[in-house]
Image 1: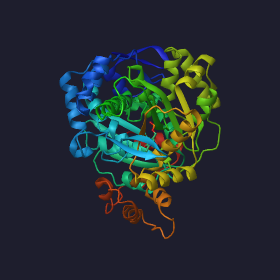
Image 2 (image 1 turned 60 degrees about the vertical axis):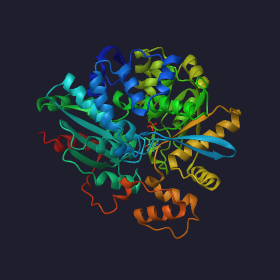
Image 3 (image 1 turned 90 degrees about the vertical axis):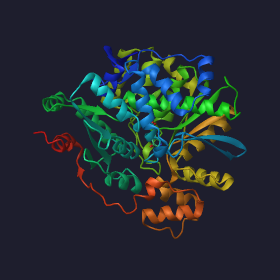
Image 4 (image 1 turned 45 degrees about the vertical axis):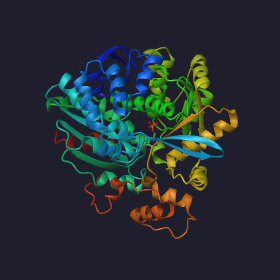
Length: 502
Ligand SMILES: *Cc1c(COP(=O)(O)O)cnc(C)c1O
């Protein structure tokens, strides 16, 4: 299977090259030229496999330049019981709200307690093998812009991995205290963490600029290094996310909740559009999905886009209690636009150029019609998010985090507006203990709350009895290693300094 750039039809690369490079030189994103199609027979085979078996099948179909042994090695080392707490790294939980059954796909049982682990525990394995195939002997420099969860998950995935260095930038006031502490205490000899004076979009734009500045790439090249990306612009990040939608469907069939062939809806709390795009790719492969329900917080640029076909990032940026979704430029939407324009790199480039220059674009009527027929966009504010956390906890004793609550809230809106009763899978993207303060405010009377983050964790445990994930509990007595803060326009120099390059 070969991959194209979304912005240049002439760019054709192997899977290994797409993963090693992260982003195309023209600024486009790598996408598969075509998708494997799974028949009823294939799904019936997948039913019998465990998560790892399903993952191996999907990866083999997309990573055609990897051997079976290489894929086995990646999967077996990534999704271990030790790292994910059980043999199923992505289990379903069932809860009820307003008489409706919620199938909650818990994607946060990995080492950093956010769904990013599902991809970032395996990406380093994909990447080191890809480097060997394509740029043997070079070291990969992983640059990450994070709204909180990607940074820690990438650091944890890449720490002390041979032939890699990782540098993470996060918005100084844009992550939760637990997220900040997770990153600043990171161990490993190849890691650097730095805050930037700006928001997530500034960090992401800054990183993209460094990637595509030829002089900087040349300096790395001269030092036997090359840039790669662990953000969801990297194909190696998206691919593992396809697996858990397919696996969840199989689990629902095996649990007798649906019959093979039945349609489901997916509900995804969305920021950079990677997670929901993975479900869309799964549907192209044959997974029967009825609606993609895209849930945003007050940064509702995506729900507006889904309703109107106009993407306009020129609006107020809100800092919310679901910080991993505080994003106005959703990178992976580019891949959807490419697909919906009939794999048209020229159209995609035009739209992305408009986004870069005027911060706004409008898609054609055909694309708009396609989007409104498949996607539903909705959003809720912080108050509504907390009310949903409380409702779900009070009704069914199920404690969810602030991002998952946005999805549940928007799902409720969807059902009320449409009456659609199709069984739905809600992606649960983080442990509530990553956002203890907001969750605690939601489920308690909000008075006499402790100030210290770990006292809040304890209090939340007292109130809810939900188990505290061991990796978060272990952070309590850890000292911070990193405290740098830099201006956005100093990011390139910061990177060169961190790499000891003149
Ligand atoms: C990253 C993240 C999201 C957003 O996912 P995208 O793939 O960027 O849309 C939602 N919730 C949590 C907890 C996250 O960490």
